[in-house]
Image 1 (cartoon, rainbow, N blue to C red):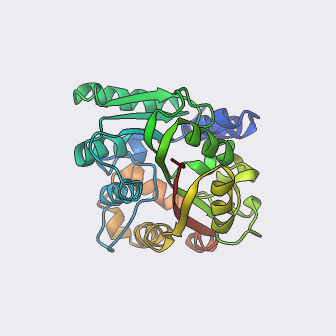
Image 2: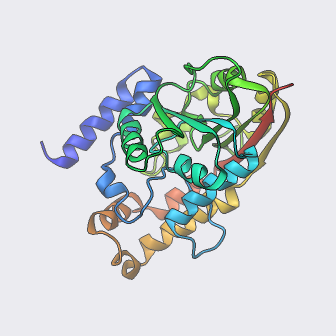
Length: 296
């Protein structure tokens, strides 16, 4: 079976399963890391935060991670839980920049957790970082364990986000902070079936319908879970909008693609074949920074 047919088969298999956690896990195992991260030093799977047009992919990933850390109020000595951590690049950054007592990080994709564990061991950080395979909605920690619970570009996958809010509330200490960066529709009338481009069609298979609501509803659901003082702020101009400028420029500029790894350039050529379709779908999306407090 050729590589393309194998990829198609794995994609169909991932979409077909009825287990929502397994579906997300399989979808995130479709990409070859050697290709996906060939032209960068980090392994972020987030959109990134792009303050200038000259921002690199690595810098954008770091910037989004620090945006979340600052919003959550990370400080030395804290116990932090990172849910949907991927390969954990943000956790290594936070240990360096904010010196928490300990970070536990959870993800549903075993391969990503294995990679994060190897890196933690190689960098002698196993005393500060622990990576766990697990579900965002069934956290294996005792009540009141953490000062901060965060999720970076992941909660739209959780089945359901409301269940994650409740679990985060349970494991937070009184006065603890939940902070997340997340994708939601700009308009509540947008339907998941509208996303068909190669960049966004996975939303149809990996985002539960219960999670598909706008940022006003987001704040209401945080309150319903028991949180106080919640804010839900749109940051899409520096994330989705700037992300589109960066990648669509590479698609339109053959000379710029010449500086990339050959396989990476081929992926851009394929996935960005219809830039205007991607733009139409992106215009339906909001990107939010949400922060809320567990009562004392």
